Image 1 (cartoon, rainbow, N blue to C red):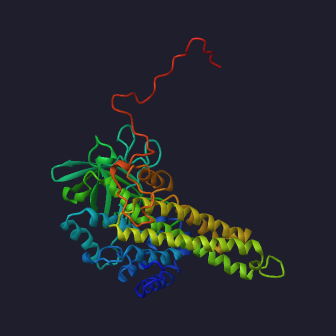
Image 2 (image 1 turned 30 degrees about the horizontal axis):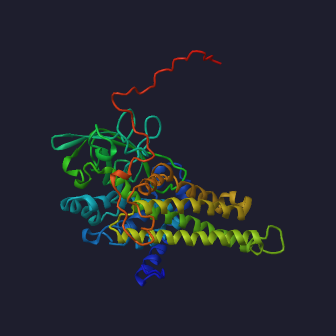
Image 3 (image 1 turned 90 degrees about the vertical axis):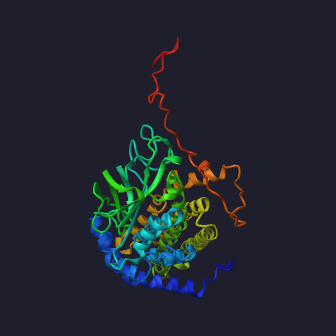
Amino acid sequence: MAIDFTLTEKQRQIQLSARSFAESQLAPLTDKIDAEPDPLKGFQLTKDAYAEACKRGIAFSMLPAEYGGGGLSNVDFVIAAEEIQAVDPGFGTTVLVNGLGLLPVWYYGTEEQKKRFIGTATADQSGEFIVGYAASEPPGTPGGTANFDAPAINGAGMQVTARRDGDEYVVNGRKYWPCNVGGWDNQGANLNLVIVRTDPRAGGTVGLSALMIERGTPGITYRSISTSAQRSTPNCEIIFDNARVPADNLIEGTRGNGDLVINRNFAWSGPVAGIGAVAVARTAYEETLRWAKTYTAGGPAPIINYQYPGYVLGDVAAKIEAARYFCWKAAHYLDQHGYHGEMLGAMCKVHCTEMMFDCVYKCMQVVGVNAVDRKHRFDRYLREAALLPLYDAGNFGMQRRRVHGVMVDETFNPRAFMDDEPVDFTKGMEGIDTIPGPKTDEPTIPSPKVAEPGFVKQ
């Protein structure tokens, strides 16, 4: 991308094609999906649109052309993603997760694994082939994913284990929140990339790996999660009960490096989530501008002619433009540096999703109480905007921690992004802001304090 931000003719066609797809295939479905109480049925309503996305090359557009993918650059993919997510952010996530599940195979897999997994996905002609990515684990005590790189002691760190048994891994544990993993029928996606603990004695910085699990593997059950936003994309709980997976399904370069897979994946998806926020805010802004140009609130002229609506919408428009260009910058940086942008991708995701949430609410303030009337869809824009800072590695706990970990490193150059220099991400940058589990010879519960002389209990 040139620094003048001019789209090439090819990029303009990508943008228009994605816009046409979203408006013709997704727009007629969005209200019905959002209102469907059964999350699996809601997802299934997108099946025809997904088949069309496969036919048009959208579903696997982010994968390398040499293995049958669309070969889009990250900038091109972000341009297309904005148009899709402006109509339906959830469908954009479904496509995004195909990349989260298969790009690590491209980064870290053997040539045989790339052909077997990526090639199978891109060659499929059914229009149903879908890929999941499973890192997140159940919330609660113990549970959660933010401390995935802590030692696996007393509930800390990632808990799904894969124990080697001959030519197989035996997988046990639970995942919670992964997207696409249940497939179209909650019997499993065609392929699921699952982050597992292959060394139960080691912390996440050395003990995690990525295992590809194929549809039909016995010992796995899926249960839909009903979410408040992105109703068109499926989230599930997965339960592994002695599921046996071929040992050669472990993506070779991820052996002991599953932590780096997580950080690199969420770096790649950072500008895609960021542009999703831009897309939602853009839709809310355009609707609000149309409203303000016709609604008088009982006055002599449409409210756009008054300072408050005019100034607020001007600020919103400026923030949308700024966020869009940040996403383009982050995507371009990934293209320039081998799909590594662990810090910049996180910065982009945090900044854009939080700024755009404020923009959506500002639009609602301009519309006023009428924004609460569901026929105007602002409740949906608000729900979609509220989700974006929380998903795709939450802004607190994972995204900001990655920025902190890189920034505190002695080698970090604060002008690196300005000068378009690479910023290497290492295992030494992980673990910051986390609380490691106790050592095995330490008590897990502090002994009660003995009252000191002269202490009077109140």
